[in-house]
Length: 235
Image (tube, rainbow, N blue to C red; front, side, top):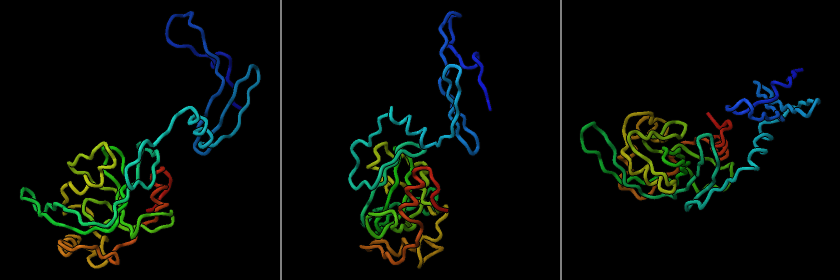
């Protein structure tokens, strides 16, 4: 068993030599597979195994968490590894887009109908985007690959030179205001055009509704929530 002597159990702030020392009360030890909490009470030491959740709960009792006023159509809020994350719903609609087909030439201006979309947003960051048949209401609901350029296979988006706003409620609209590029991974976004997203967009240009039967399954709502919380989501 590890022991801590009296000198190790005391410390003081840098400064004059007569600065009073402080007595060590608790020590947290994090190993590869175990977290130990060690206590020092006079001549009696104790140790017990604790979970990361227990430690987090102790500290969060002294912290104030609030989502503040959430934007319209907010689905969930959580504090993720990179800060706050808000999931937003945008119902099916036609979006004006700019598709950069060739460098140094004006982009093609299209009007593309999109299915309902779930945007997982953090302030001033590129969002994660998924398609849905309806506004999500349970973790078991299926989500689909967003049939859009600038979206990676896992749902993350590539910002390029586009700057997203600090206000998360503006991020979905900001995503469609960015310039879309033909480069990057664009496969498996459409059953009809699995290897040619450009052909899909050109076919949809000017249409009123997205053919939802063409969507490609990706994951569930619960898996996205788990990924936002830093837990294992999906591959």
